[in-house]
Length: 61
Image (tube, rainbow, N blue to C red; front, side):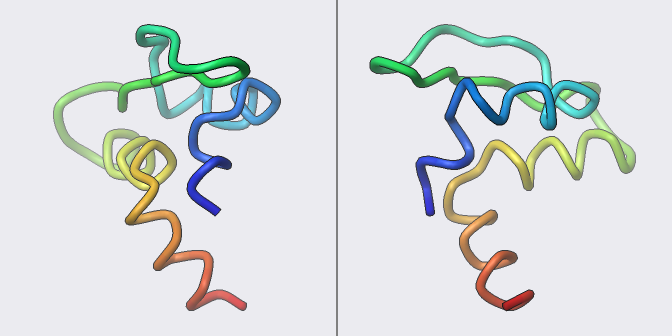
């Protein structure tokens, strides 16, 4: 599941909550959360952190 937080395919879904960062490996991007506080930043953290996203995705299953 950790790959989902860094794929270029999912970038449009993360775009409202993240800003572009440096490139990772092939097909990976390292986006950063937008802003410094608030809901947008919190969702950006969730969508860019592989560990946070895994826990959230597993609890929703």
